[in-house]
Length: 133
Figure 1 (cartoon, rainbow, N blue to C red):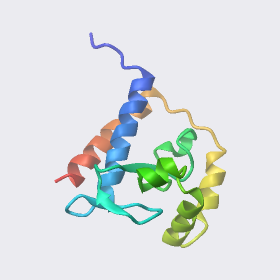
Figure 2 (tube, rainbow, N blue to C red):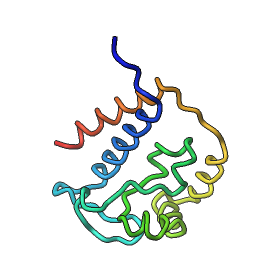
Figure 3 (cartoon, rainbow, N blue to C red):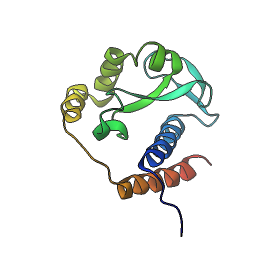
Figure 4 (spheres, one colour):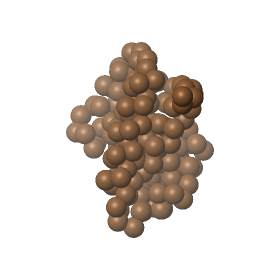
């Protein structure tokens, strides 16, 4: 009988897959991505991260593609995500005040079941297979 995987490990696995997916999604054919907030260009494996406009602690948006873009380590960690610039860029990209919409959504709560997490893990594994060819 397989051992039950802990919720903590499911979240960690999903975080890693979602980060890889986000970085691959925005990379060119050579694996180069641009930081969403400062524009620096590097390979998606070279200090580039999955940055969140609204912090990951808000589970309802933790795995939201609208809330995440590629950021360099300096912006994401060193400059706490450059949230103001991130919001300006999101609003420009979407053509309306999506930042306010995401902020309102972040006030809601979402509890992912282990089955939800496993489903998302499988979804992003498949997406990565398609992108990473």
